[in-house]
Every structure is written in structure tokens, then in C-alpha cells.
Amino acid sequence: MIVNKKLIGTACAIGAAVCYGTNPLGALNLYAEGMNTPSVLFYRFGLAWLIIAAVMLFRRESLRVDRREFLTLSALGLLFIGSSLTLYLSFRLMPAGVASTILFTYPVMTAAIMALFFREKITLSTVSSIVLAMAGVLLLYWGDGTGALHLGGVILVLVSALTYALYIIVVDKSPLQMSSFKINFYVLLYCAVGMALFALLSGQPLMLPPTPTAWLWVSWLAIVPAIMALVMMVYAAKYIGSTPTAILGALEPTTAVLIGVLVFAEPFTLRLLLGILLVLASVSIVVLAKSRRPSAS
Picture (tube, rainbow, N blue to C red):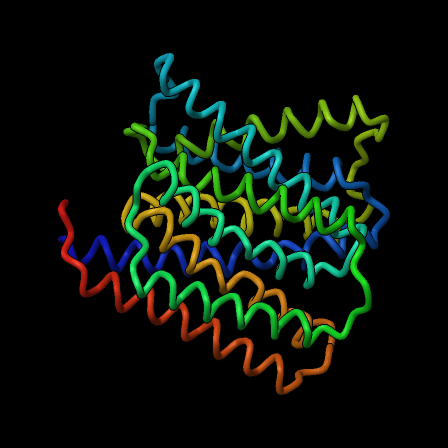
């Protein structure tokens, strides 16, 4: 059973990274349809919440939480609102692939926070995997061929990375004893309400998706980078820990680059190939290290 938990946790971390890396695919198509950022995120989270609510009803799972659980779930909801909103706003100021690449600073933030505040030991495999992943991400960025970056966009992505790192750590270290579906029922509810409030306060009215194609992309964002990514990330953080989960997130910018090549016909350069290979090498180190490390559970 120990081996199965490691395997499941690693597979979930990889799956969550790939799913979350598809955010630009839906967001950019919805922006092209004329939707504003609060509307995109409101319908993404609102539809995802409805789906999770239906799953909870089918499972006949109780929605009751105590005060401590409520506070933890509230923290998770606020952190994910911050991470999603700043990332999607950055898509307005810089290429989405570049933003997704810069977002990958969150594994370094995660490892640093875990070392400073939770005294987690920084192993050679962790350092090696971070170095390889960052080198690969830099190659993926340079392979984009863009000019100078918008400072505001960079700041937004760094805030998104920090709040996402904190989200993973809270999931890992929290005492929550409930299913991933129940956790995300409350997180997604917070996010949907938060986006509605942001739309009201920012003077950007919520807009209905204008076409069937737009509804299709909203559904994509709700199911793939919301429900699937969040559910798998909870299992990954619980089974293999926050730092390995964050490092395996190297597949996020790789996914964004591959979407650019395969969907938007962007050129596939040698730098992109080398970057992807370095990222895959970093992921392999994490997987091998987890498979060799004895578990206390």
C-alpha cells in the first residue's frame, strides 16, 4: 500500500501539472471572444463548483465542517482566488506561455518556505531537480522569442506563484480529514463568490459566454485546469508532500509550450526541445527519489 500511495501521488502531481498547464488554452480563446477576466474566472469556478456539488450529492457526502476546518478551507479559497486572478490578469500583459513559464518559480518558493518554517531538509535530489527544472524553464522562455517583459505582468505572475506555493503547503500541512471533493467544493465556492465580488468592485460586469464555442472553453476551464487539477493536487500533496508536488509542476510550462506548438503552430526550436528534456529529467529525479525513500506512513 505504501508503494501504491507514492505511485498514485506522483501520477496525480504529474496529472495536475499537465491539467493546470492548459489554462492559457481556454483563457486566450475566451479573451478572443470578448470576455473580461472576472467573467472568465467566475464561470470557470462557478461551473466547476456545480459539477463538484453534483458529485457530492451523488456520493451523499456530508458538507458539515467544524470551525478549524472552516478556517483552513477559507484560507485555501482565498489563496486560490489570489493565484488564479493574478495569473489570468498577467495573460493580458504578456504572452501566456511566458507567464506560465515564470509561474514555475513556485517550486523554489515552496522548497524555501518548507525549509525556513517547517525545517524540511533540502536534499541533493531536491536541489538537482530544481536546478534542472529552472534551466529547462529558462530555455523554454528564451525559445519564445519575445521582447522585453511588462513589469506589472511579471509582478502579477510572481504573486500568483507565491500564493500557489502557499496553497500547496496548506493542503500538505493542514489537519483536514476529508475527501478532495469536499475540500474543493468549498475552495471553488469561495473562488466563484470572490470573482463575482471582484467584478462588482472593479466595475467589470459579469458577461455571459457569447457563443457556444465560448461555453465549450468555459467547460474546459471548469473541468480540466480546475476540477481535475485541484482534485489531483490534493492527493499529490497528501501522498508525496508539497515540495515534490511543486517540482513535478515543471510539466506546467512544458504543457503550455507544447500547446503553442501543436495548437497555435508556433515554431519548435532546439531550445524548446532541450528545455523540455531538462524538465523531464528534473521530474525523473523526483520520481526516482520518492520511489527509493522509505515512508513513515
